[in-house]
Image (cartoon, rainbow, N blue to C red; front, top):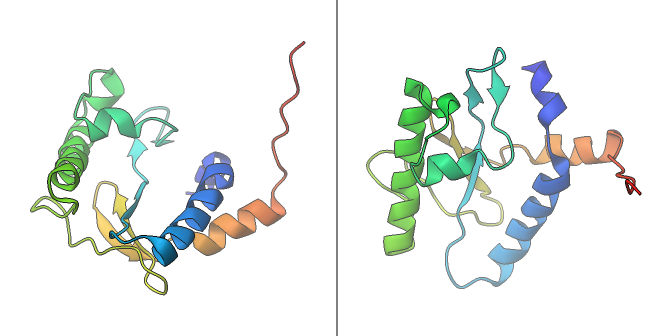
Length: 143
């Protein structure tokens, strides 16, 4: 949806991609990348906002926006993945498609949405173009 560009966050996503690249060059344990791309059924479809993953990850969906069936199912998928990762160091579980580690040349990202899927090099070109061409938000002190 073209409106999702209003919510695109190259301010956090670009450094995260750079971190993932650096980590895969030096880490001894596998690195797993993920992205929450779910549109919540509020205001005609609101993209996942910063912090919306917490209720899903811990399956503690108490706010009304999380009560619809898609959000409830997503909470199961995400919480099972985090529980598997905490228990074994590997987020794979029967609830999601196969999730391979993020490695150079195979930048795997699990997309958590109505339909979960692993994508390779998911949004790198978009994020770096957004960072290059879109105006930066400059915050001014309020005093």
